[in-house]
Length: 157
Image (tube, rainbow, N blue to C red; front, top):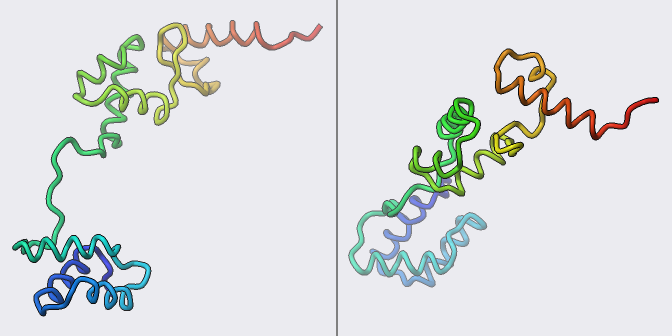
């Protein structure tokens, strides 16, 4: 049985048109849909809307920016911007992509796994392949890492 929201709204609209009261609609739907039934307050709200003249059972579009800004396209664009200029700021990326600065920060640190070393965005977990690349930025990073590594790891005597 289709237990989607729109299917349940269609049932609510039908039963309301037959003259059923909202509490009776809720009891009947709870028997049929069980745990997948809409909440009691949602059913009552739908009944009120249908009484007020609403005929559409689908969700109405919401205003504002979509919350799904962190998609693979945005992540890849942020990655390319950082690869082109390691000293780019989150604010510059946010302005260029027209997204929130917090979203840019989330993409850089959580999705890409980058951290800041000497005001440059670098991967948090560096692989040995970075040490052998020809890229000048990677070369400076690998030199910095080897210096940090030599300072933090005790030498054998």
